[in-house]
Image 1 (tube, helix red, strand yellow):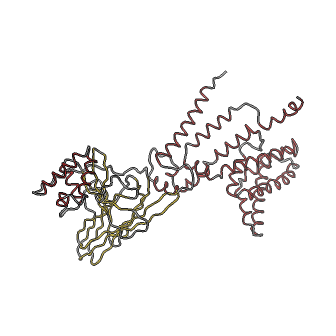
Image 2 (image 1 turned 180 degrees about the vertical axis):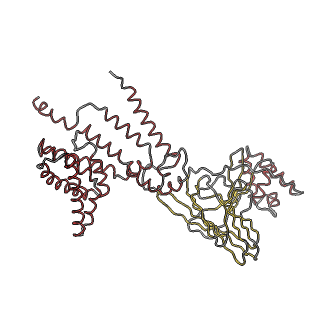
Image 3 (image 1 turned 60 degrees about the vertical axis):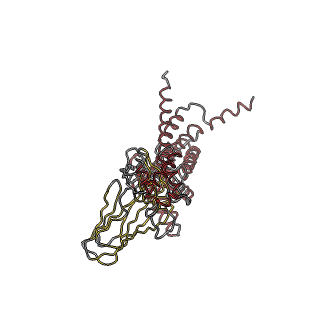
Length: 502
């Protein structure tokens, strides 16, 4: 006897691989388990204003990139008369507008859509800035040394040192802090003190995201490095870490806006938050194919729509296998119920049932006449196919004439399959009688209804479309069901008389 161990090992491997792929999709790409979830997208618009004097103009604006917490989806600009280029400088992106000549008040717009994404992978890894030590004069140097000494004693690393320095600088009773802050911003002062202590740090520009805000301005944050990692500090209140709705706009030591050929420049920001379905968010996020991202979302929209239906077929197949192998329902054709269920999805259940019964019923009557002509099989099947097409066309026109537009959906039925169904049932009628036609036809419709209910379930549609690994799990279950050799549920009624005799 052949060992079944390799078979069970194969099933176990399929299950493990399928579940691993599903878990990978969920945890690595943040694909939810349930449908209907939405994700916030922040649409942020930067407005650059300046006064041009008739000379050549070059405006370079720092722009954000994908960063922890946010994935960049798309960026657009509105700048009539200007050339535009996106360039990379010092590890961050910039938008550069240029014009041969411009006069008067100028307005340039840059818009970016950022997806709130806890699994965002930064486009560029933040690199520590070079240390720039400043030489101060007395009494500032003494005040700085005293401040640094006090903070150093209460700290253990770069981050805790920064926290203690911020506490000292935010202390209104500290004379040293008041002296050092003369003529310098708190953020610049902290960076200077840290650089003098050989700690890489810099001031970065961030944007507090609030729905519906207009003319918002950037705020300064301190980025402190320890090795390749960094932490953000709010210089105003000393808070460590990046708040949920804080997005870094400019992460290099460069300026926010460089302008040549203009004066009185100003950059303001407006933003709005939109909640969009998770599928749209994932499509936008995964439009650039990644090697390890086995997602339908990486395909063009037309192919995605096609696969959305195809990936449901294994669910219908699983239902058919279960109802035939475990329950014992008999059907006309092995997987014909799956095709009928697919047609039900297009027509709706009630319309599909009525249309199917109508076409098959009329087809059986006409087929009974053809059987008396003793035609060859191919000619007879061809005649049945033409007959089915005519019946569908006739009922569609009739439904349209009387105003039942719902009835026109019977055109979604697979005509070849219907023709074969009529042929098989007709032969069954002749060989085994009408009872067998009712049993197998009814069984087919019952299985098709169950398959339709499973395939049309919103949760199942979401899982099959977003988790390709589910197909391996279904395959493992089908193989397990195929290994079943026991009695079917409907066969147990044969033993009922034996139980009653006891």
